[in-house]
Image (tube, rainbow, N blue to C red):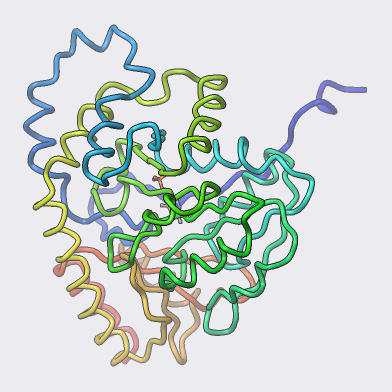
Amino acid sequence: MSWEDNVRKVVPYVPGEQPTNKNIIKLNTNECPYPPAPKVRELINDMKYEDFRLYPDPEAKSLVNVLSGYYGVPSDQVFVGVGSDDVISMAFLTLFNSDKPILFPDITYSFYDVWADLYRIPYKQIPVDDEFKIHKEDYYGENGGIIFPNPNAPTGVLEDLDFVEDIIKHNQDVVVIVDEAYIDFGGKSALPLIDKYDNVLVVQTFSKSRAMAGMRIGYAFGSKKLIKYLQDAKFSFNSYTMNRPSLALGTAAVEDDKYFKDTCGKIIATRERVKKELTELGFEFPDSKSNFIFAKHKEKSGQEIFDALKSNNIFVRHWNSPRIAEYLRISIGTDAEMDAMLEFLRGYLK
Ligand SMILES: *Cc1c(COP(=O)(O)O)cnc(C)c1O
């Protein structure tokens, strides 16, 4: 007998690389290439450092209220956390407490199986088809809960609201989580469905469209009952999840709506242009409604292109996993960053 027999052993999630070298083009973790809203910078200068000796508001009211106002959802139907990873992790722990397997796609956010393993939740990964499409009928059987991103990651494939609602309709006796990390880049949010179904959790984040990955802010909407269960678990886990700067600066970011919409618009315009250029270079990809493109080249292997880009200080994401080893996930950067990448590829693929 050893103490190690009592250890909860897990194989951790591997996040995208955060290189310390500043002289790189970083297209590997879907961050926003533009800075946070100007209002955020103004507030940084006004923040009182003496206040850091005090605990933050455990209920995160300033942030909850601004999200409540912006999205038109009562504040007792809003949950916030340290990035949507924290929100989803808490949701797994609280809402997927079942002996039946939870369901999610085989090609999807690779944190889901890690949380399921961590919390000992049985799960079944359902293959997407060869076009990376989810088939809603695959989710009609008995299960312990469902989670999928819309648009899906790392494919970028968006489903419409009818599709999302159909899955919810067929799963009224379990919780359905819609992970909308990329919804601001051209999709329709499932948020209105929380009024119709009390078993739905819609999760979003400040990390991609609001340019604040470094502040770690995520949030979710659901029925009053469902959010209360999440709050009870959160307060049993860690009362002070959100720190003072995140609460203050997150609130400022939501208040600057014009900047937010302009930024999303710029990223969408760059994405559409890069789609055309990648096609001309011999890449194929499912149509993306996110801030990345999941592309494979008709001739050159994914690993080769990944290595070539990296040795030229252009970082993209590549997984050596079945079905997707030939693909690269390329985040949408500024126009100048994308031009530099395309210029390199033009020479490299010639
Ligand atoms: C980026 C991402 C998240 C997590 O983002 P946070 O930075 O933790 O808010 C969650 N789900 C998907 C699908 C993502 O791509």
